[in-house]
Length: 419
Image (tube, rainbow, N blue to C red; front, side, top):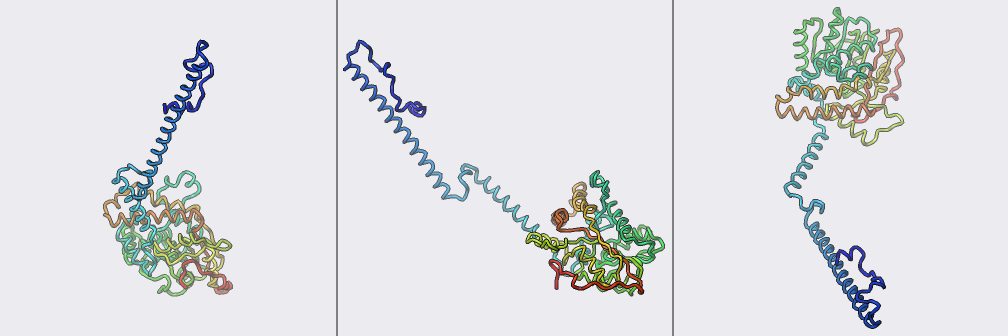
């Protein structure tokens, strides 16, 4: 009966010619009585059907009310009713764990505090950085053709040697006899230049005693006798004026708390007619595009995770170099296109060969995860144009042709700088 009601049978009148129990031989009164009984049956069916529908409606309301009461007594959504509480607890626990891990990884752990030497001592002792990056703690160079083929097809360590050769070409230096490598790391560049210019004397300086030790060991192993390494602060170099034909600074400016002093000191020890060349991670020039709050937060993370006091723009380095009043032929370029692949390439070499990390234990596992996160964030910052790869070079003018000093008004205070 309920089935017929739901199909639309309720209230449908019977056809006149097919009234039950009525035929031409019946009297009108008999037919009327029969019709009355039939209508009564239909009415009774309608009443029963309506009663059943009302019962279904009441049952649905009761179920809804029970669901509401259940929701009111638990924090789980009604869509999860019937799910095993153990599963719910596991999912919630996983979510909280992932959130906690993200919070940890988003919180910088090596904020600059005159701690550059200590950080590089630690990296040197651990051996992981040298294992993956080789003798050169700087980005590599990938030609347009190599990028077209795929950067993973290039040897990661060879890319570093290629970078040194390209940086030398960019500098325009010709057969220097005395070379200073400012922020020399393990001394890879110092040894490479010493091998290239056998008649030159090469000096590498760093804040890390462990790097000096390792660089000296490698020079001895490789039979490179025209290079030496020493611990020295690049902002207060114990070196006489006009001492070097080529002053080389590859990815050391990032750690300098006073960029102006950094450029001035290198200019001071450079001989007249000599070449100064700088490679440095730079933040973009704000100009008419001020940094957003997200830009500032991204930069602050990059400052504070790898002991950087602050970055400046490529243009700012150019202004600082001109501002010495001693440099001419200053040139600036952005090499992000040919260096950015290094960030992700350095991650992949660890994926392909993870065993040195695996055997180092939990402390190194944790540090390696942090490094991977930072490498990827560096890649993203360069990829979206927040960061640039600055190449700056110039020649120290001869005494008879000193260029005019640039106005100090040109020098701008970068995000994060201490003033």
